[in-house]
Length: 333
Ligand code: SF4
Image (tube, rainbow, N blue to C red):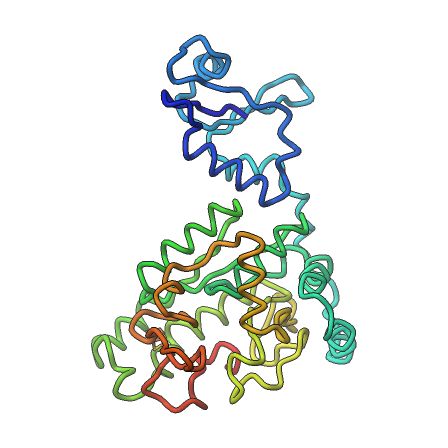
């Protein structure tokens, strides 16, 4: 790895970020050597390597192949993907487990550490298991998945109405873990028809169901057709009204997967919000800046507000509607 040392003696910010990402993913040991490119010394080893390979960005990576040829990577993400990522499991579906099989797995893992459930899911489904990512719980799953060293997929629903800080957060996570995130978008024609007929804020007048079904439910259904399993950050105590029956592993009766049946993993089902935040702090997991402004559960910008002390964590979601209706339909169809 060639890192740049600035005139003030400090490493460049991008080099530090790349190093942190490699450490987070447990890949730092795979770097054989760090060579410095001193900004003030054109004859430093790193500067000479940059000149030799025609590279003027830092960091960059040099990999010597078995044939003696050197491969150069100017992108840390590409370097990880091409050279360091665990071998990708064959993208072929195994036979889908039955409802009974999954119930037995759920019982076995009910009281276990969520990281064990994440590992089980990735060993069972490989990159045909996708983590549905948007909030704090989901990044905990990404962190746990990343630490297994196993292949996994991540998808995120871009409804077009997310808070600007959420877009920044998504990008922060992508870089921090060196992962690809599959952003899934609503169908343009459906959004155009809704907005033309009812405007941009119809959910305040006739409820969120119609908009959520166009911007979230349909895109998720479409995206999950490529997978055998998906992982969610749902927890029991997020919504006593709608999530009290949650189990850690189940058959998803709402969506169809690549081979028909789809398994759904909720590794954090039995964790409290405090446990999630303890994990985030102890593991230096990135989080959305909005959490520092009183937001607890974060969805689309117009449908999320900060909560007051003592309010339930989902009180800020669709607050103008009854508590029993405050689900976007992603988990209920
Ligand atoms: S959360 Fe609000 S803006 Fe987002 S899809 Fe649902 S109704 Fe639409």
